[in-house]
Length: 180
Ligand code: IMP
Ligand code: MG
Image 1 (cartoon, helix red, strand yellow):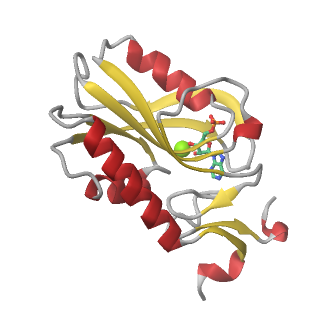
Image 2: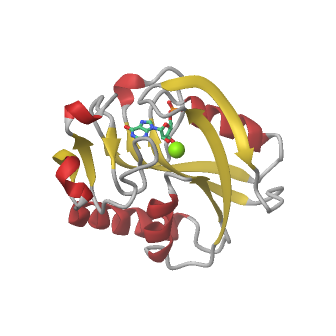
């Protein structure tokens, strides 16, 4: 049976996502032309976004991965951020672009920005697909943003609820009885 049966509402459809990513890719290609940016993907949620985004960018780039954990299986952040997997690359002197799925409280991003700044990159910018501004507890600057969304727990396009639904091609909200 399809996982789509669990979705109550589609917030951002597949075509709308792809159109926005094409736009972000064009902007990033323009801004980083002549550089060789290092895109840092935050695992696991941003992996779907990264894979479409890099194909919308037409300049040389490299990518690396980092895993941070702040959630258990619930929809509320524990507030404690932990580095679970570090980068392979040395980022000193590099033009770093962090690729994140969603910025909620801002704690994950603030932690990563602090952590990466100590490694002395040339600069660090952030590209987030989604942002929930009404939930912000820590102010973080988003240089590139796909969509602002209301305070709803969303799934799909890389985002999970208890590790499920990452493979939906759109961003949606689950039927309320499924959230525990
Ligand atoms: P923050 O540290 O509170 O900004 O939370 C950021 C992380 O929480 C994201 O990287 C996601 O993994 C997760 N997250 C926040 N909101 C959602 C959501 O609506 N759906 C799925 N994951 C979310
Ligand atoms: Mg995440």
